[in-house]
Image 1 (spheres, chains in turn purple, yellow):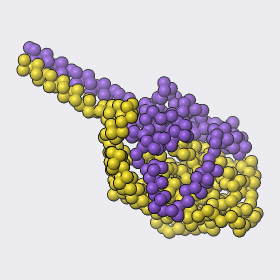
Image 2: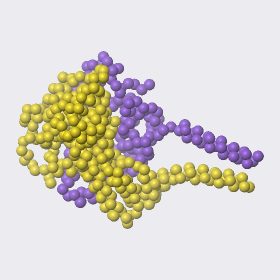
Image 3: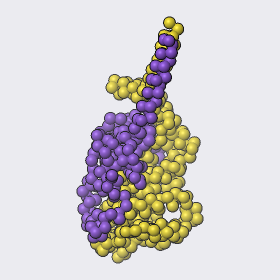
Image 4: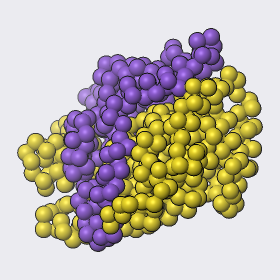
Length: 178
Length: 304
């Protein structure tokens, strides 16, 4: 009797555990710092939250190239190409999403990083990384949100086009999440 | 008694399985908390074995590829034109599915008689003045930049890494930094692997991709243009002006025809707005008028 109850307990526990595993939400991970949680599956929809690299999000559904996720207690959208299906490696964890700490993340990540670049540069003195630094600096858009909105407005692009007001429904990828 | 032993064993086994799964991250956390690099390394190597390249690694690969391309090419001095091109590029990149990158997107204008563009992993995109000159509207410029951004967002440059180099890179990463003593030789090993990766990626970025990847980038670009609100037909329009670069990359005219059949089925296609056409003329004004500032003989020699 005792044996039966023990076996039964174990079987039930196993079933309970696997049932829980089956119901467990699918997790994906933010691939890069400053990833915006969007209010709609559309590039220029409003930002609900700014997520950190490696942050886990719960997958709800998919719409085109966007994935609907739950993150930080909110439901929003992220481009599928900005999500990883596997938890990323160590350097990602717990780092803040500022530019300065991006460097720290790279340093903590023992892969191709500034250290490897410095070594490679030593072996290839013809490569002008300083020039590239300058080029990258001058082609960085500081405040893309505001700057680009002004740019789209001026160019009557998308939501700012004369046609958008009359036929907003025909625009793909911008349908409100249901 | 026997039963109890059996049960205990089962319980132990269950705990062991659960424990193993958690061990990697726990070890890592302890390591981080205590600052003991050995623990960090142990935790890391357990987790690293199955991983792909990170966005930051792609950036460092791309930077070196860009630096190599720039040894035989000159950045343009037309910085205001570059700023305009950059805004168009940043706008389409927002809809690439990878709006954020490790260090953001960079659209760098370079001098060149041939209409060329180079999409480096991590988001450094080089585009020649000749390719910009080939465009007659902002929508066409957006189409070119959407195509290049698509290569980056779809990881086409990184896909060029041979299986052996990929394996070496990822295994190298796992082993790297096991102890301080081994660090120097590990760094030199890893830099050697990096060199192999740079050769693979550099070749792909320089030569272009196979037909299927070009088609994939074309279709993704059309989706981007449509989402942003540029005329998606403008990509086919630019492709028709491009010289063929060999059938390996797909004949531009055939690619254009493919896109025609795609866009023909679309409804409510955005039209090119006049405001944009005027802005485009201003934005790249120098080129159109033949007084492109960068075309003048450069006084400053680029730093070597």
